[in-house]
Image (cartoon, rainbow, N blue to C red; front, side, top):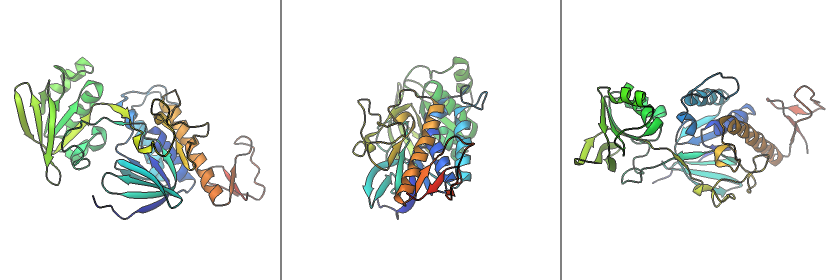
Length: 338
């Protein structure tokens, strides 16, 4: 695939879960030109229909929480591109991210916050049509398929949620799942399955995705035989898994494939930071991931300032700063000569 002209940023963030979005928020508030690259919005957070332990909210669903942080980050200038990072390497004193659609982006610092990535089907045509009809986030992309025919592969809670969202907008939803029942909460699943535009395809699996410039049809193996379904899109909602292989040559991983970080979210590679579920921090909670995103961003900012010959320091608590002829940054940090 022909690559597009390379775009340059001060900071690149891989992942738009709560960790990556928080990092983007903190960096953009420091006037750092920041780009977030992610296949979807919210990551695993969107699988949570209700969160009751995130400070400031008595109850909120995962997608709404991610959306709020996304809006904050964008308001301060952060850019977000929904694309898949397929390669990361060093170049020209910084780091380059290559995406599945041929994009290349360079940044002085890099924050890895991609958590766990959506599981793929591994069938012919899937990789070819990513972003051209194949989606891993019904919450993000369902509105794009209003009045169209789609195939959904999903089971359990995430499958039911995706089927509900898609059936609200699509003309027809062909719901493919491997078991006799779709799973999830029985009452909700039954209600969604009974909608007139939902076609259940139990004990089935996708064999191939076909098309031209985008998805046109899907080949499905069913108990009655192989069927070819005309469709405009394919939604894959089968869970998440760690995929740190694109960073394995850049940073050190533990035996679980998680990125090793210190208390400042620094990795083994200078200029590369990591936050959230992708790291070796044992507590996988949204609030912890958000905190790590903030730490990674502030550490990345300090690293950038050091490269520019300035020193960043926080003196005492937030009520007891001393300016001492230093230039104050927009978020309470101070820039000073080394």
